[in-house]
Length: 156
Image (cartoon, rainbow, N blue to C red; front, top):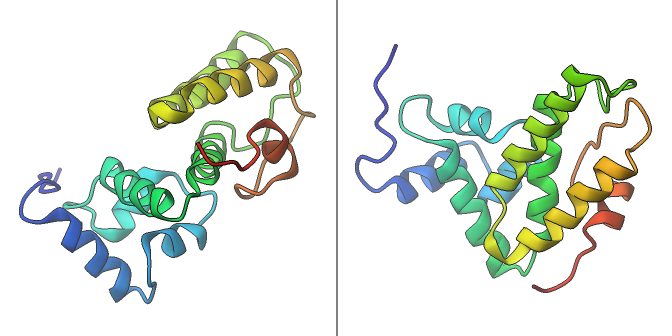
């Protein structure tokens, strides 16, 4: 097992150097090219031993704030968490195991949600629980039609 060097040196500079080395002009462009890849795997792609998922999220949030696109980022993170937690899409049957998988994916999403969007995410989670999407639903990006109805773009 390798050591974690994520917080050594200037991690922000390192993060953006890696993104540029891969041919992207922003962290958002890098992430957008991989819309269903979880944050931790984006971090591994940028530096297995010296980039952490929370650093990737921090950079994405900073860029989203500058572009007034935080709600889009919130949807983006949900797509990534659902892709990881529900790889076959929304469960057909909501038994204990599938409820647990849904709860884990939504919980990880909530953990990455900025304070400014917590209420809206709580409402979206409630809608997903009470009126679940069709079985097999898998959003492929933050502009998924259902996600746009749950969390429409607006300045927050």
